[in-house]
Length: 251
Image 1: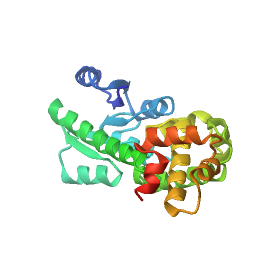
Image 2: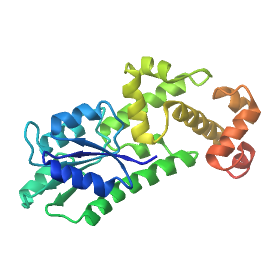
Image 3: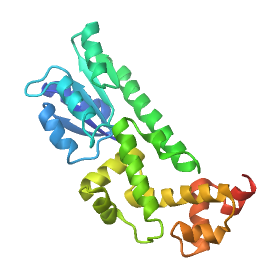
């Protein structure tokens, strides 16, 4: 699936132009001001925001501030576009948490390179986390708020490892969050569905227990919620590229 970009600008011509230029590689959402952008963010899983600075109602600075101060959206990268080519303007945007600053007029090639760089770097971190048995989930956090969220989520999963039916509905109740909000947050941070993240957390806990020694593989499988050692072995192999036995032998 294509990553989803939210383009925010009160100029319809610029919105149309950017949408056409970026639509080959990305799914595009459009908003005419910051308030409309925030409404879309609550409805869609957005991977990156490109926003003009000078807009009515809510400008780009206020939108960036709202995104970066929100628990629900703070992980989303923001690129600000501006014709105010002053050092103070750039400092203000960066202090608000903007991930990149692009001066107008700009080349679409440069903007595309900025977008790709931000998304590729985050994608590499997510891949590294997902396929490395002992890498901590905090490596994919983009803010302190994300770290706290991921710590709480991991604790909830660890406290319910023996529940083979642990799903998003139970997670949402434990986290005191709505189901859609929790789904969007997990998906945006990790590129995983909640069920996939639960499975990965089980397998990472299993890797930790196997590394410590003192348990048989079938014991570890049961401790992390697998009733079948065969299914556990298949899941471990699929996730980490080695069987539990190979992992133990190579520790």
